[in-house]
Figure 1 (cartoon, rainbow, N blue to C red):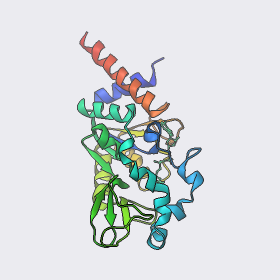
Figure 2: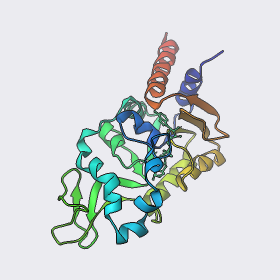
Figure 3: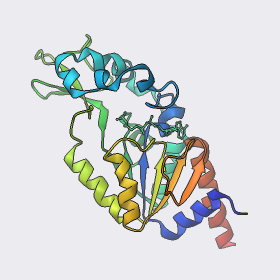
Figure 4: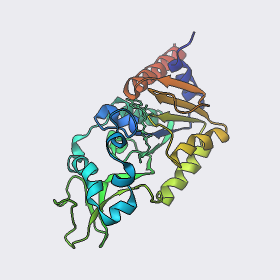
Length: 248
Ligand code: APR
């Protein structure tokens, strides 16, 4: 009986051309709460109150209440072994692109070079009046914080009711339709259009590999039920084992 790790490692080495889709689960082991797991953010806060553009326009404090701490401690969050493994796979010429729903900036911080942040990033904080951009964690005080011009500051993230950044979404759909393998790591696959990307990839003949502590994609070709950091570490080990045996 082969291990799913060796099967997926073989697939990645054979096909390469891999695009990755990540969600909050990949950052859980970096100490960032997910949204819908037990103790997730939306278990405590109603997303339609605390993360909707409609409410932000009238009462921006609500959003800052749930994101202020993260932004003011932006530099204290570190990537984990799962983020690091994706950098290694990029350096091996296997991963071509990381598409992330995460706004924590940890893929770039880990060293991934090709990253599409389809829900934006908490790194850029933009004045809603003069468009001035501040970079986390260096933002003015106050709740909500205001720009020197008096305008309210809003992180460059997509709130519920807002459109995704066109360029990012187009790139995500285009690259999903061109990959041979899609690794889907740590997402509940319930938020669209992100949850449609594995469907696009599969429709264009790609193999889908899900890595999660629960199964969320019914027609995934491979499933690794484990935490992202340990799963990705074992996947790299399996790739190294196959590379070693192929040269012996
Ligand atoms: N390793 C792997 N998977 C994990 C881990 C872990 N350590 N911890 C949790 N998970 C899985 C959960 O089982 C769940 O399937 O990660 C997933 C997290 O799901 P959500 O909390 O729904 O996060 P996500 O899918 O990224 O949410 C999508 O919804 O609220 C919006 O804009 C927000 O980008 C977000 C989008």
